[in-house]
Image 1 (cartoon, helix red, strand yellow):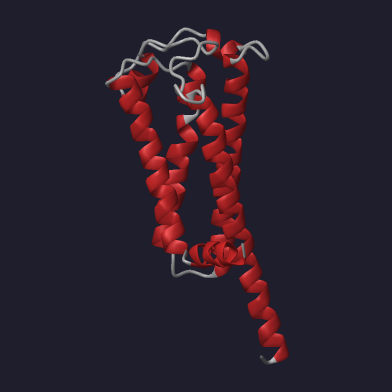
Image 2: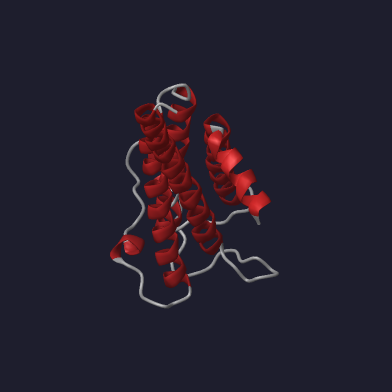
Length: 185
């Protein structure tokens, strides 16, 4: 167990690697969503599309992290904190979507809105595509029976914990540096 914790701490201490991992995960997740839609004909519902935004935000924030990788720890603590909140929010959206899919609660009015049809921008074209129903599971894992929303809950919770740990480590390292400077160590 101690070796695993040491490995995790070593990974978190390499901020560029962590930002790269987050960027890869966000881009891969978006690519899988678009692949499921474009090549396998799975129509996303409004909640599915809404869950894509935090991945785009996460990709942008992780790119910023890669650009400022040499900056002070305080900047990284803040950036990792934002990433953690971003993924925690997406996990909440995915959990809500899971509840709608599993009929634990009714869907909200967002799922009942007709798709937008005006405009020609890329985003508007995506939004004007046929929308699936939020309360139906278009695909489930044949082994575990988990939907994409279920997997998104787990993925985003994991990313949120990773980013929160990175924020705590960056903040904690700064505090240790201040303490070392004050004691002369």
